Length: 342
Ligand code: SF4
Image (cartoon, rainbow, N blue to C red):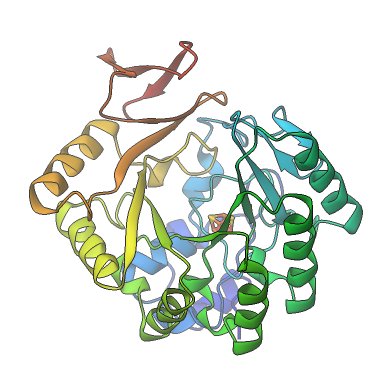
């Protein structure tokens, strides 16, 4: 049974005071949802910290619910275009489990449901008119919460509109619900991937998420010839050490998954207690660089506040730390600020 409340959680773990005091206020908190697959893993501290809420979420007033300004960058109700050459389509707000560090809290778990046919058509029409877009991220929420039939419709529609572009299938389901990847789902993916290159974008944040079931799903994607890229979020108390990050990268590489990004946490309200100070992240990246090959090293990246876009942390865009605040320049030369610690 999926866990949906503190009462449900108490059947499996003894909650701490901070966990017990969490309140679902409907404003900026995500609901609790922990999938059947994750339930037996909830005693693992790395999993618990990612999926069990804390009252610290309620008390956090730093940041806001949409630091990437996705609302402003929306060109149709579900299509976000922050960059010239790519766009993100928000397939659904539903996930198999809600991650407490989610950067899209304004949308995930908001009960708006899957994109309607009209919303899919609007996005496809925009893509047809904008040839400068070369990649579309199918994201959310988790696209694989859709039924096979709905997914087939979605993938067919996008391919018909733009058969010439790359699609990133963004999902956390290999961690939260690997059983979703049935043979019939793979048939849908296989059929639609012909002529429209797919990349599977996973989010494994800790080696313990790479279960035997997850490995089987990875193997099947590899067999289909679909490259797999992993995006890890750097999280306090979960993976904020060189040892854990190195083990994660080595495990992924051995399965033919490329560690792609290591993300600094966004300034999303409700997630401050999970963010790692940037200076510590830089130290971790340095340690990883010493222990991993270029193939195993993800790019330590920050998505700048106020829709500033992604830049590598260790790069000419980083102007340094003064009085506890980091200054970055965006790709367009604007300035953005990020606190060292909250
Ligand atoms: S699966 Fe993705 S969208 Fe859903 S809660 Fe986790 S990070 Fe957010």
